[in-house]
Picture 1 (tube, protein in one colour):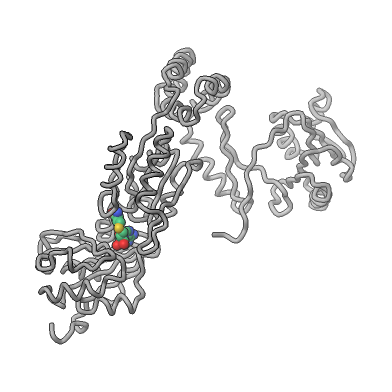
Picture 2 (cartoon, helix red, strand yellow):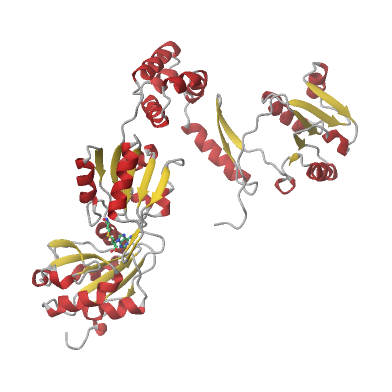
Length: 478
Ligand code: SAH
């Protein structure tokens, strides 16, 4: 995060409001033209005016105050733009405006400006404003150019049509969630294409039909969405679409902030983080929240780290939704085992080393009661273990006790796929020691099997693995 606070964007309504432009040259003319277009009452103060400006004065479009700037010119002005080529005058304008609490912009002088004029893209009443805070105007300009080509021309007439119909839409669809659905369908429907072709009448008809057919009450639903392991690039397109349509997002603590940033700004976000031993929201409370919001007609996204059906209690949540007759859908996500394998350079299967992969969890409880250790200890397979870091020591010991070779390679992948990913590799006999030595913290995935050693040579993401499966690290017994 930058230490400089970013500018606060606003769009101001200048209709019939007095605005002062100081300067009489080409820059002052351009600024005056933009202000006039916004409906401002423009006064230009300067000793002499450029011919076009002088023409506007004769037509009564702007008022001219002749002479050298004095603070009294600011009386009654809402904004002032200093557009002279004299640094001293520009500074005097900024200082006088500051003293009177009038917002001042000094053209091309970010430091002196209390407000900045952004680069902008216009499609009728729809405007996109871009600012770099004054520090990198060329970058803002480049971004503007890129966006220009992406935002098609139908947006202008579309914004006009919606502005004209605004009150009717509100009167017909009083429920905000129902309105939101109507707009989503409208934008996905034939209307934009009709406007793009200039088929205005057909567009009006399409709009009327969509409004007439829109359900007045929205029905709620829950989408169980896998957010993947952290890297936002690993979210599915379908998951992204649902996040953009959501009214409410119930997310786990494990979901990365970068993924949440992709969701609709005004969706209500509720963290239902669960930490082992310190349950902040119980599973029953999560069920109640889903039922409450979906029951009120909202579109709920239940966003889970990784895949919702892999150690995510997604199954239980669907059973509850089913029992209460709530519509649901499930969007898979990239589970930690697949992500950690890929991002650590560990192929989970490999013709020479492992013909199967097992996903298992040894979370919290004493694993000895629940797992079939003899089969877990068998060779030629890869184990991907989802677990709290606390259980590592016992896990390694038990595998060895049941016959897996102490020299079997392991890899611990902490924060897999995230910028702070760390990988520790070694041999099973030294698993606990290595984890402690490197202070491995949750979330971390343990990979056991010959393939884990490949991380030492195939790694490509982030820092190289710590430790390593060096032969000299082998315990003598092996
Ligand atoms: N549904 C999730 C798993 C939830 S259980 C999924 O499919 O990935 C939580 C465990 O998943 C953590 O204790 C950790 O073992 C593992 N995990 C989740 N995200 C991880 C990540 N980015 N890096 C390493 N392990 C992760």
